[in-house]
Image (tube, rainbow, N blue to C red; front, side, top):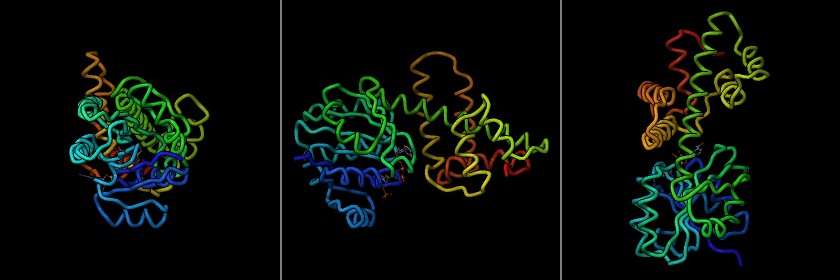
Length: 292
Ligand code: NDP
């Protein structure tokens, strides 16, 4: 029989990920701070809505929360109920240092911890095609692999505890760099009279292309669709974690540090609840043009 999973945090990412676990045949217990979402999940994905204490009965406990701070709070609440030998898999884009502390706490109760942040957005979460970058022991990773394969396509153990979160933070800092840089370049081209669709077609057949130019800007900015799938506040949080990773490396990294400042300004001006791509509205405001 397949092991039982529990999933804590049914947000934009957690909701579809938990659904895919159940679809893959792992009986999935679900918990969410706002109860309405749990009921909706149980209805639409045939999962079981539970209280935190019952979630602790699962062999694999997933969390997908905004930051490591919320994960640490739930770990504390669940510690008295957790079974030794169970494995906590944290899909939050968290903080490596906080994850090492959480892993040590869980370790005292015989529970293994894997930081397993994901990439691929809500679309990848729905399709089960996420990239999962895992930090933690090889033994726990091997045990968790069948469940991770139910939610992702590319699953990679990248190092010890915290390594997954460090890699995710650097990845998302690169997302921020590419998004903002493409926004500045395109706004300048619009002011030169170049249609942004034409500019993107050329860039995407040239060496300046990125996920921002290939997908995000054509689908969300040029169309003015601006869907809200990944909050600007969450991306700015990830870039902030990226800065801590740089601090630990003790090296100059002026471009990435400037990107952090830029996203702090964008978060303040555009608002943390806006989608991350809406940061480009600030560039449009400064330039006095729309990238459309
Ligand atoms: P959402 O804001 O959509 O969901 C957040 C979830 O956390 C909700 O279930 C929310 O519960 C819960 N939550 C918030 N605060 C608390 C709290 N204090 N205690 C308990 N639960 C809480 O976020 P996402 O799903 O977008 O993101 C989750 C994680 O995944 C983040 O770390 C994010 O950076 C990362 N991520 C997001 C991606 C995306 O495209 N959206 C892509 C890859 C990673 P409630 O329903 O009650 O509000």
